[in-house]
Length: 314
Image: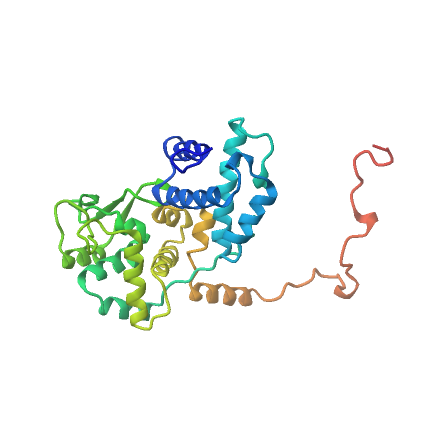
């Protein structure tokens, strides 16, 4: 049974996701698209789906995609059936069989300084401002797209801040930016109010449009990088200069420092200094009177302290 072409359980779940769970618009958009496709794929209502039917959907709609995408899709479907079980609509969870891919450790991939210089030198004021916000402010494409001119605040002491209202997961934050960002915005044309960046239709630009504009610009210049690697560049340099992973985490708007570690690459110079310092320590020397050739690899059983209650059975 459906209502207006939508499974009624799906309507209730999406209402919960938006109004009670408080999911961000981008996350909700992905969830709606995926679960609507799942509902149309199944020959039965969502609450009547079997594990085998969900596995069939996984093979058709999920398999073959990137590991991160497959994991996100599995999370959305599992969330739906956990909600159903909590609401008493089902007794067994058929989504428990879905595959949760193990994600490889993410390595930082910052754009090189040479490529960034070329990209900035060949960008018009609007695109130059977007590039600068990501490379020198650490903003995501969705955050650049959501900026209003009222989000820019300049203090009497010369410091400037951006209020990020549309961060990932709906979390906002305040980011301090330097003179390079301010000069780029001034060259673009600072206004009192309204969206900071407009699309070709005259409305506020979308995150996809920001990403496409930057990626096409880099491709046109034969630069092997993406928009997100500008943010990696910001994170790596911020960590290199501050040595404060927690601060960089806050500036990037990450929920976990583990995520930040995937963005912030320590400098090669710092690694070289550490290796040189290890060499200067030299090899450890054995204690006087101890023959290294006769030193056992591990303590003998007799050398171990007695276990508490030795000789008693447990």
